[in-house]
Amino acid sequence: MSPHSHASLIIVGHGSTVNPDSSAPTHLHADEIRRRGLFREVVCCFWKEEPNMREVYEMTDSEVIYIVPNFISEGYFCQQVLPRELRLDGPTTRRDGKTIHYCDPVGIHPNMTRLLLQRADEVAPGVPRDKTSLIIVGHGTNLNENSRKVIETQVALIRDGGHGFAEVADAYMEEAPFVADWAKLTTAPNVVVVPFFIADGLHSFQDIPVLLGMREETGAALSELGVFHQNPHELQGRLLYYSGAIGTEPHMADVILDQVHDFDAKHGIANAECGMPNAELLPALERWLKEGRDTIGEIAIASNADGSFTLSHVADRGKDGLEPHHEVEAARTIAQYDAKGAFRPLHSAPTLKRGWQLDLNTLDEVRLALDFFYPAAVGMAHALEREKLAAVPLREVLGRQTGMYRFTNTIRDDQAHAMVGKTCANENCLRRILWPLTVNQPLEAAAADKARPNHAPNSIPLLCIEACTHIVSAARKIARENHEANQAKSAD
Image (cartoon, rainbow, N blue to C red; front, side, top):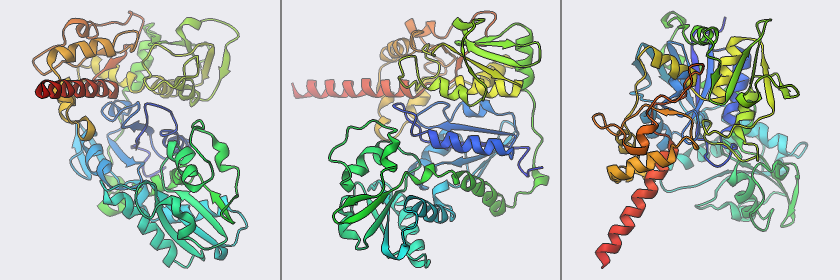
């Protein structure tokens, strides 16, 4: 038995509201760890994507939870944003009967050096290291010194570790030494460039290739994997080999596990200290299905005579000729894009495509698939049923925002009500809002309609316990407009 078979693992990523590239590696590493059966549950959450950090706890039954940030450095996000959003008060937090262990981010683990070397050899197979310069590329920023520090540490480890490269250098997109100056930073006839990012996206697919001279301008679509399959590139009289982001390396799953084991070793955690897992969500889901509550959002759940289950779009219930899927991860893929191929950052938007069916063998697979379709929906419905679901007032959410969102709480009450009514309208989101404006002030006008029960008797409700990133972004836009209007009045 695995030493963590009693516990849950939560992997935290950044995510994106624009495309799925940012979250893809985190999901894939979670899939791999889940297949190994080392933890009772393995789930993901994100800063800018669903499931968010406040609802992820409703996706696990376990009393013991390990959280591993899938981030490169231990800077602003890992030291401030993640602890704040995940409600952590130190390396170990005990709350609501759960013990939550907060591990270090993957990017600072010593085994990242091994992955960098492995990625360099993979991208330039057979190319002798003594005739190769290795460049590790970061974003570069003056806001967080740890962002640069982690790359400089890796460069020093490889340069001083006797790994045989002619040169090892760090370069950055927005500060010196600049990646655009790669030819001046190196002298070897072969140059291997590895982006030290968690995910491939705008930077690795578009920006860095332009800075290296591989392309003249940006404009190619994201997820154009061909950019990594055209090596080598003949540039400035040398051969340049360009790699995908280090975070896409499959062995990153092992680094995530390493951070869990290192946390145990550092804090003296032994199996004897482990709690027993709860078993509440599966029985609740089983009971609901027996009661005939076999829909959730736009999903219909059919219980088959042989004990298996079939999921489909509610509009396709009972139809023949649907495209069959048999792996539970297919639920995540189906949920990512609408019928026109547009990315669906909000899973509860009424835009789930039709024409598919997902055949699953067990109720546990059904529960996981539903979390892919509607993150934390099963857990939140169960918590509401037990009267243990706590919603966070909108003003509290806006009040804890920082950085470019720190002024969002300056919007007026009437603006907040109108914003919620418009942004969260049923044509945009199927969830029922449980949060008020403040502890003592409920939502009003059109926003109040979203706070009323809106699910049919045969449905499992979709619930919202905290304003999402779309609401925060809308509030920022209003706050900025207010500020500009006030400046204009002052100028007059």
